[in-house]
Image (tube, rainbow, N blue to C red; front, side, top):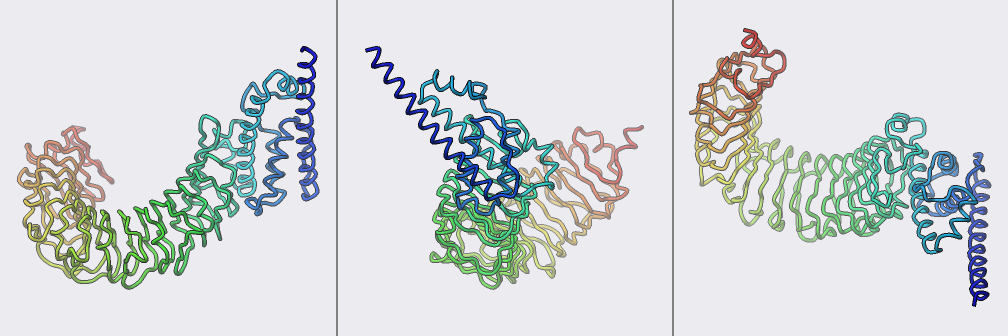
Length: 538
């Protein structure tokens, strides 16, 4: 029986030796392959285990189309650094031939294979990070090299922008402002979920080849990308930022290049004139098309647009009209600021979704709005009149939704006051600025019993500004009077605004804040001079 056991043991060792010999032969071939195709000298003095694994990984990468943009020199620079600087991830891992052989004899083969698999992945991801660095940064990333611990002997999970899980697998890669110049791969990171490559110099086509299906967020804003391909492999991608790039003309979207799983898509700040194929995103919730070159009427229908949208932003285009919004029954935020819409903004149930909670309209040429009262869920409104508007801003329950919590009115207009403020029982934030408001105070605001933040900056208040309980509610915690250059002093009744925490009076030269306000527990924000200094010095 003992002889049989001995024979079986010998056979097992012979089989294992054969496997290792075959592996060594293949990795030796990969090394010869690299030498034959490169002009760089390759460092040959390395520990057996590390070198064999590394060359096997390099060969698989070189032969992969995912790395076809990298030259042999890139691999060799990364390889040389890797062999000199990479430590084993575990103290238990063998570091020499003798220890390596003892490990095989003393441990179960399955356990060995598991360690080999884990270390192989560790080395592969580390090598790819080094490859990305050496191919893109070279001498331009010295600050990152020093401060970010890149290419150090430390575990790469501690390098700047690299986040790993407990198994030392890369799960997040943040390489914003790394001076990346155009060669980048998502291949090889099997557990990665979040990649940020913003504010670099990536250009041309960004090809998503070989990327992990686990990727959920990809940010490419602030580059020079002109095309996006291969994204269909990202089956679980939910967020894609392509803002501030070099996309132009009509953009065609199809299922070969984009994952249909997206929930947020941003094309803001490009030079796009239109879109074809947006309807493939059946679950898209947020779409940013700001600051492009879309002109005329923007027409929405089920054949060309995702009806699942909750947020749509078309700010900063040249739109004259917007049609078909009623099919977006889940829409709660709409931004169409800085366009060419003129006259009254007309809202009715046949053309507008009543689900809207946030509506942004400033920067158009509007003279008013009709039907706003049907938006019974409206919480936030941004609005500006055209420059020829003159008179009071009038609030009535027949023309204005009482559900408003945040109201922002801006633009050069001869606004003389407000009427009907008492209907805004839910208002917590009120802002109006950049107007020709000539009053010396804010009249009637005391009835806004829930108001917390009041912004009165960039108006034309003059003389003494007095805060009273009649004009300002007890609930107020923040008051801004910034850049009302005609003001000379600010005072408050002793019982007014008891909860005021911040009073902002920046950009007002020579403003005086009276003693009663200066000695309150809240703080005063000023720019050129501490208006309370003389009082405290006394």
